[in-house]
Image (cartoon, rainbow over the protein chains, first blue to last red):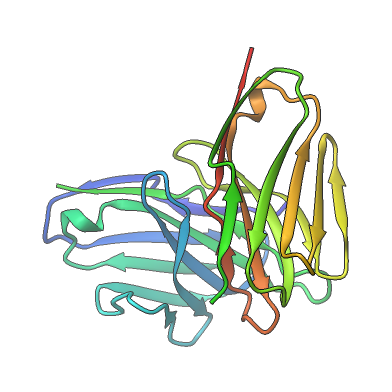
Length: 118
Length: 113
């Protein structure tokens, strides 16, 4: 099946620093990638949708200047948490939608990144 | 706004038991519905996807049904095993929703020896 690689799996940083998370589709081209955030014992909340070569679309309440998303190629999207603070500590998960024509639109998920801001 | 609810929030069963997880959604204009599994601290693994025109999908010991008119889906797990212990999430994509998944609240399943 399709594989989505997310890196790093875990990051601990000091308050005020920026953290970049990468999401790569390894064996397919992804026209659309999604970034989710998950708090402990809660479900996934969509943060933003990114399409290759265009600006990301952010969900209501998500600060676009704080969570910078770049989707420079059909296989790579990055999420940068700028000036991270303890309240940004969370589990971030990306997903990628296959470009294959026909069939159901399926999203494949990365393994997630656990961000802890001290 | 689409809301997806899963009942129960947590479930503990003995090994070998058959079980049913429930998912309900408020907007029936869905494109498809997916069931996922999430192990602690991990990403999501897609289990089954049901298109809006389908009523059920099966994969091994798993069977998922969809009743759009009532806004419900069930995930049936036969002969449960300890390895089935995980959180199960259902998610829907609305018709014309731009492929955005709306996730349910999840059911945490524990299968005991």
